Image (cartoon, rainbow, N blue to C red; front, side):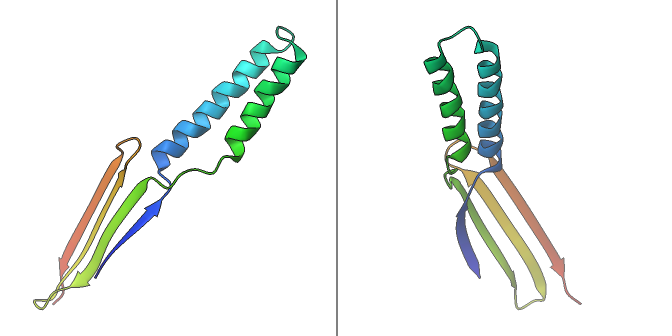
Length: 96
């Protein structure tokens, strides 16, 4: 049995969260130093980043099954098309 799925990438999510934190720091630094319109624009940009839905760029492929010799295996692969994150997991056990 095999399957594939598209999900949100954890590495991309972490990068997006850090970008929001950095943008908040920039807003704090700009308080009182930029026009009110510019300040409100910076706050609005943060709100847009926070509410932006994360793209599903992580492809997950997996297979779970048993062969005719009693070998049970799980194979999982994940890779992101955006940041090149990759993860592999293989497990096999012989059933007596």
